[in-house]
Image (cartoon, rainbow, N blue to C red):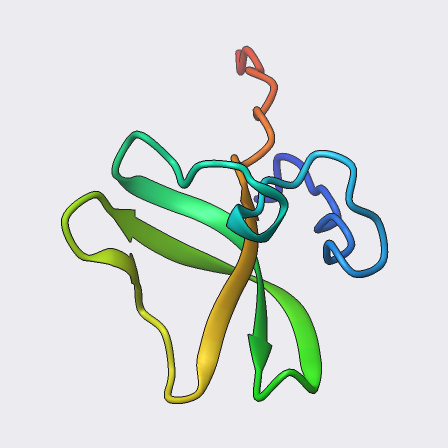
Length: 83
C-alpha cells in the first residue's frame, strides 16, 4: 500500500533554497541522524542521497571519492488517520 510520495529536492547546484552547506558558512547538523545530502563524486556528478551524520565521525556511508556538499532535514510527512 502506498500512503504518499514526495519528489526529492533538486541538488544545491540547481536550487540552493533549503540547503545548508559548510562551504557557505553553515554549521553541520547538531543531532545524529539521517539527512538528505547533495553529494558529489570527483566534482563531476551531483545527486541527492541519504547520508548519516555522526557528531563524532562526521558524514558516514560515503563511497570512495564522495563528498557531502550540502545537507537538509527530511521533509515532514503528513500524518494520516487510517480507519
